[in-house]
Length: 206
Image 1 (cartoon, rainbow, N blue to C red):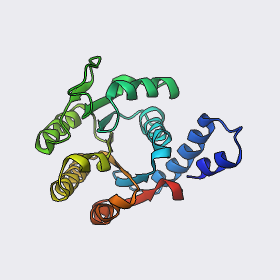
Image 2: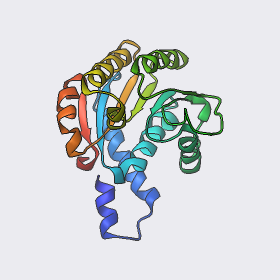
Image 3: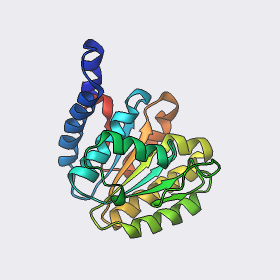
Image 4: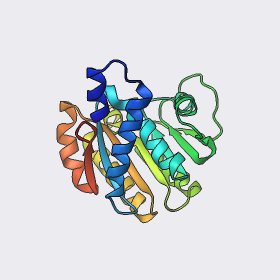
């Protein structure tokens, strides 16, 4: 990611500036895609927060779109706190969470969140259907992340789930963003699911 490399050479650059720079690069990339698209977005652990902030601000705040955020990485409560702190004019009423992290944890209940199990992809698919009913055509769906779901599910089942969700996004005219850790352990899975998407985008090469 261009901003991240610049930060390594200049410790005076604020994290907000890095995020803004990446957001501009991401928006330019998204503008080259069809109105309704599904992309596989590859990220490293160091870039994770900047990537999700840029996505939510570009799609949710700037374009005023309703979105579904399927999270298997962070609790929905933590994500909401992050978005409210770092994204000006973030409207939590336009974001619906499918939370695969908080189910067995003592956490604060969030009105627009449903707790799911990352191990039961059939139930997760049903919950996603219901969540997509809440948002309008032209909205967006972020799946965060394929690498985390791979911990709980066998590869064949996960590939089938990802393909189903991609097709669901197309049929409902929803922008689909599927995040995956760009690690060596994910290389084979990334190659297998790549053809499902309009494009695979590596955040480090933007």
